[in-house]
Amino acid sequence: AQSVTQLDSQVPVFEEAPVELRCNYSSSVSVYLFWYVQYPNQGLQLLLKYLSGSTLVESINGFEAEFNKSQTSFHLRKPSVHISDTAEYFCAVSVNQAGTALIFGKGTTLSVSS
Amino acid sequence: EAGVTQFPSHSVIEKGQTVTLRCDPISGHDNLYWYRRVMGKEIKFLLHFVKESKQDESGMPNNRFLAERTGGTYSTLKVQPAELEDSGVYFCASSQYPWEQYFGPGTRLTVT
Image 1 (cartoon, rainbow over the protein chains, first blue to last red):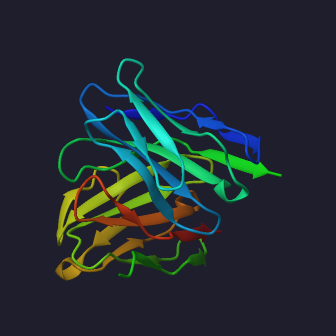
Image 2 (image 1 turned 180 degrees about the horizontal axis):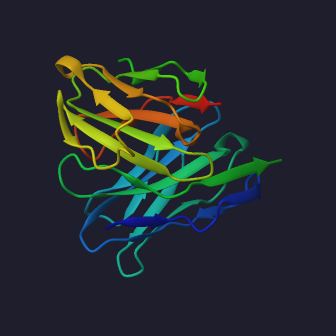
Image 3 (image 1 turned 90 degrees about the horizontal axis):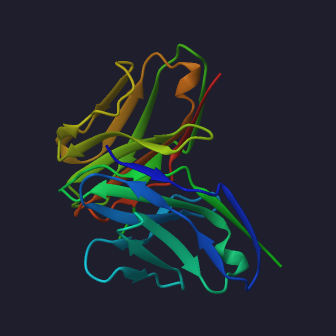
């Protein structure tokens, strides 16, 4: 069975500071990896995904995540955060077969203040 | 292109009552998923439709939950009778490809 651990439930940072949201997973088979973001009063949006190939994946708004197979991690990073990045971030995995469900971590609330 | 929509956005019912949640997926998406987040816990998978067929319902908590997807379009999730522990946010997602699920805004269900 697969599982996802997000090590920090809350991460407070100041605007323009760098941030890393940690995610570790457990699986005996190959997986797809995802980060979703939920802004206040909105649904979940796919931020970025790792399917195969380059282990570093990037989003359009400056976030990046690196797949580390040996450490079974998929940490999310941003070099300089904005107030608008305040949201809850979810790491998720799915077994890389057609149509399988996502397994989520408990989420990390990123709070960016000025 | 319209996204995944869910109705209602909020529902408050008493224990023992029935509630039906609706999800309209993105047009053309054969895959439809239901997930639930109970307060303080992770988002958990409930079931997966491919068109009108249940592909995987291993996450359904018990037989008080009934999901349908008539004609392979919209889906409903009925809880009957509702219990206090059913409170939470119910998310629907749809996808054409398994690696890109699009989520709706969720229905917040409160059972009192």
